[in-house]
Length: 264
Length: 264
Image (cartoon, rainbow over all chains, first blue to last red):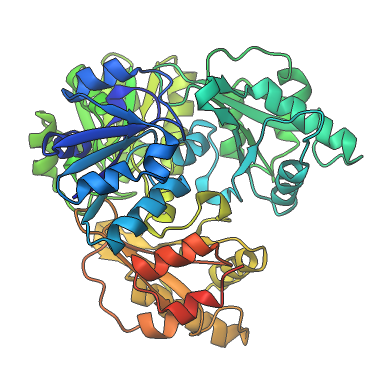
């Protein structure tokens, strides 16, 4: 049996009771932290919480050597992953491979930025369009599709959840300010004003922690702020229902004048 | 202090350790099950799991009498909700109200169909467009916007997560077959073939349970199948990456010929 178990959003206490119990029944416990890592935790804190030793596997050990699959041919094996499993293609491929080799599998879900961020931003989940990721850019690499895709969502009246690039192996996490600077630079490069300094954005930092930051304002006002430790993500809202607007003012500190002109 | 705590997807074991601990610290524990209920659980199973008595509140007691807010003026109060909190507007309004009245709040996230369904369907979360809900229809009430919105997603190359109506107070849950029949009827009514019996759909039933059902096929082949107990939801996929296609064949039993013509 191969269990793929979500650790949830932020720290070692975001795992479900169901996940903990499944781990108790397993012969071996692995984890992968190259697709994402719990920012409010550490390997030793996770090991203390679950009461088991955890072997952390690198990309090659999972995707080429297929260690969890090979072991699960004989044993009950758990693979722990940050967030809700299956969001990364790696885990989908493991399920396909396990199924082909006759290994029973079970996925244990957990909290994810995909459902948490709309809620924390006070925006209705069914009004979100496609999720966008802003990658790290360089002098030679500056894709404009993330900007264009947010623009498409805006034109369709859909909010955008904007995830920011992670290079977990280098402990490098894009900040909300870097993400916002990307948007302003793309706007300039494309000579397009769909998204400008005047647009409303919501910064969410440390979702799942005791005090997540939720801050809404014009991009021009947010771009130089320091939002503290990772992970950060952004939401770019389209037209607002008045309850969404109230929330952004009351909870996220948005200037009333900025959100009021966005009410549908 | 007002805690809004997610119970997660399916049963009383989907709550996080963090949620359990917050409940221990609370003076009073409430729950609302009118926006959604755990299908694999019961009030008494939840009470046993958390070791506390729970008072279930109706819509009027939360939205008009504001019982959780009134009590949280003096005490530490937990409000338990199915899934990840804040997906329903009710909870957003509670946060706004609490904030205006100087009550500290904390949201504890949990698993949600919004992140679980894309994963269970083997489809990439960032390729989903807007979430659509199909409402119960009648002779006098047959909105076509859910059909049209799925069509918009398809044209944009985006997968659709399709939630099915719930009337929790009447213990009435739309089945996947009813949802699919709605799509065929809307297609006929609008004389539009964006979605027909030939389209691929994925049925997900009992997400979060030990054996969730994931079944992909042409709508015409699925519409008369019995998918068992609620909750059900649908996914209508747009163009597929070959790993998405492999998953649908291998795990969800889709006919290879049907998915192959959808590979981009």
